[in-house]
Length: 372
Image 1: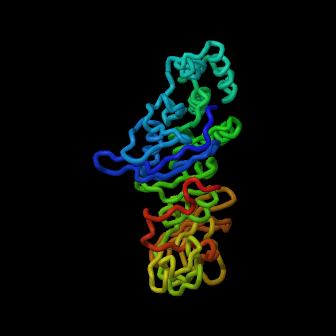
Image 2: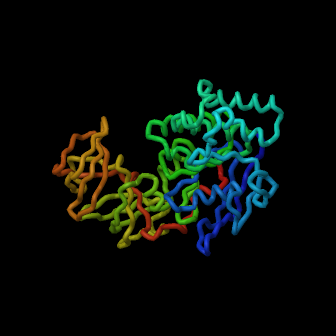
Image 3: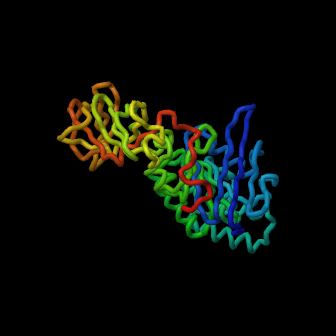
């Protein structure tokens, strides 16, 4: 693999027809790191990847590989491998010929092409399918061919744009493991675009969450999962219950809030004092909690009536509605049925409180390029 110490995006931006698709992206990627660009459709993640690949010219900023500026280079001069959502395989070529194609375009010696192609086929465990055409393969096998074609080029960086989105649930899980295995065994540096937060959490060393073209937060999976920096990130990272609540008292890093006539204690997100964080008595805040952290209790709690129950093995996924008409989602081992009246509670450290206006201007919890 071609080596570099770090790849740096400095203030990278891209506009389409006068509208910002990506704004001031600052990100430092270390050699060997797996970075996931994460966010909903239209957030700018694929735009960022295409700018990095050279498929889109920048309208602001620059891209550096160590001390060498590369955003002025055409895509083929950057030495990156690319894995597309659509696989982009040649339908009339066998698995072997598809994997060898890029090597042949580099005019490498025939023996070197064969050696690398054989190694690539073995790497993705397709030895028994090397002579088949793409149309004779399953979706997962086709994706393995696309990955092998990229890595045999021994790229300095592998770019993956939603590579698993066309696969069924079982294959997605299998290919997630395969991609992580290849990344680790080959010492790849990988930038991976996805809208699936579970996929990003399981694969990446660090995640970059984007919203409307702007970075919301950069951090490790644990940081993004446990400490979203604003309620937009929390919403995207699985805090399915986000409700407006009124602060009735704030002390240090905790605040008491009222929702539907019930008082609950939560933690001010970010660990700042309540007043400093813009959370003070009388303010309306966003209170966020994961379905896993809402618990059914026999004591005091938030009243709700069960409306929908989904069987999920040991647990049930439940939607309940409060007297004020708000739907809440929880996961529980309690055996509930539609119409059941329940009381719900949550630990203060699991109920995160955010200023209602905390949005796209928030600062990243972990600065780009900081240690994981």
